[in-house]
Image: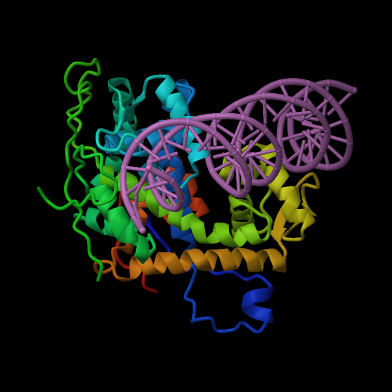
Length: 194
Length: 194
DNA sequence: AATTTATGTCAGCCATATTGACTTATTTCT
DNA sequence: AGAAATAAGTCAATATGGCTGACATAAATT
């Protein structure tokens, strides 16, 4: 089963920074984990590759995937909140969202309580596509996780979670742990176990 | 500190796919690991964010980073090989590479044996920037890895590595300077402490 | 000598992001 | 009630980083 030994220390022997110059001790920076850096790059590229192929068949791109994904995960989400998750401008969102709405993957319903809102939902068509894409990623993730040293899954999740700036973590934690009920209310979204 | 309980999968209660739609059962697909999927998205976004900020100050983008990174990691690499790593077209590479060369971050030397080649090297300026960017990522990775269950680092690397298509793994393994054991002789996957 | 390879370049297209300004409803605040 | 804030959408312009296709040059290979 294709095992690998990750060699611990690469070294670099360029001219400047390390050797010739003053090399100011900036915190006794240990070795740079080039392997991790590059693994993240390659892993993420592969992670997005399967959905990309499918999306292309619909004339969609990765931006559509992100929108579709988060709308599917958070039915009734408001546009503002979606913008907050994706961290893009409303113009950028507007373009792809319009396509998804026009082609009947996402539908907008005026908020019952606040009628300015256009709460977003996937249609069945949209949900199906979202699910199909999620399943592709699930397969890859399962493959990656299955023959891992005994239950390192939590370690992997922890690692990814801790890649996020500490101040931003709780927000993300809420987001990914939420079992979303259809309240339509923006803030709150207090998760916790049912 | 900041520990998280990753709630094990919620389910989804939409209308179609599961019930009325087409989509035959493709193998009793277990629950979709939405948390992992989203963690990867957020983690990768954060991973690239610090370099992006620095690069912007130079008028560079992420594409420049990738080129600079791999040239710095593989001094004397030929253009063709770089294209193979990045999986982009030579026109796309050409554009950013030209800027990096023009602004003296990368230099091209004709190959000694094959004089058609323009072997790529970072200048000291380029190496310094590459290093600076790598250090930013190192800090974040260290933060993410340090307080992880008793060295799960290997599990994380293994996970990322196995996110890559099996056929493509050995190539990546060579690239990132790991030893790739194809034989299945699971020799010591835990140590890495010379 | 013919072909292939390594590299580069011109020209144009597309997707996705940005900024800034402005509009329309609707809600909230005073 | 009237002012201000909010939710959402839109127009226009710009930048980045991908892509295709066609073509050019030098050097190596056959």
